[in-house]
Structure formats: structure tokens, C-alpha cells
Image (cartoon, rainbow, N blue to C red; front, side):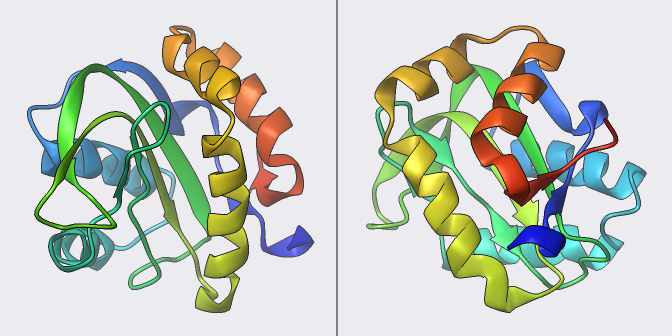
Length: 160
């Protein structure tokens, strides 16, 4: 993927997040992406609608959600939140099932053809129970940022 990396910075990596529901968690992360000129307002509307039709909750060792879309994306980006309390996301595999999600990984791509590669990279991380447990327990956003940079390698572009 190299030059089509996902931009992020310290303001887009959050820990100890409180959200009433999946929509609030997504809106919070979209707000951070908007503050960093990564998305247009239509992105938030589109991703909330997409989440209803194609949910992104995954029942991994540490339950996660990976909302993603390309509509309204100005710059490919990545934002993440470690939730203080679990939030219910509908399951990607069965929309009638809910997943009590502990982490949300939001990303947008300017080139939708990169989506499969990005999802494969995330899934390889999600399968490592020890790594995911460590990420979930991280309370310091700087430490979480360091861990994610190490895990995502060339998929992540930062200001550092």
C-alpha cells in the first residue's frame, strides 16, 4: 500500500472514551477526522447510514468495530477509540446480533480499491488476542499511538 497510507495523528487516537451508543462513538471519531481536514460533513452522514446497512462489529477476542467508507473522504485516514464501557455495534456477520465493542477503528479511503488490503491488515491484528488485550488496556493515547504505528507499519502515516 505504501504511498496510500492512512493519515493519523495524536488527536485522532483516543482512550477512555465514553459513548452512549455506536452512533455517538462514530460521530466522535468523525469529528476528529473533520478537525484534521480528512473528511467532508457528508462522510459522517454516509458512514452512519452504511453502518445501519452493513454493520461492522466483529466478535474478536477483544470485540471491535471497523466503520469505514470512501464517500466524502478528502484524505485517507485512521482514527481509533478505546471505550471506557462497551458499546453495542451490530455484527458484521449477523446484523441481528450485537457485539459489545471495546474498541472502534474508523477509517476512510480516497481510493476504495485499497479497502481489502487495509481490512486484511486490521484483521491480522484483531486475531492476536495478546496484542488486542494490550491495546484495550492502554490508557495513554501516546502509548496507543506508538503501538498502532508499530502494528500498522506502512499502512499508517503520521506527523511524527
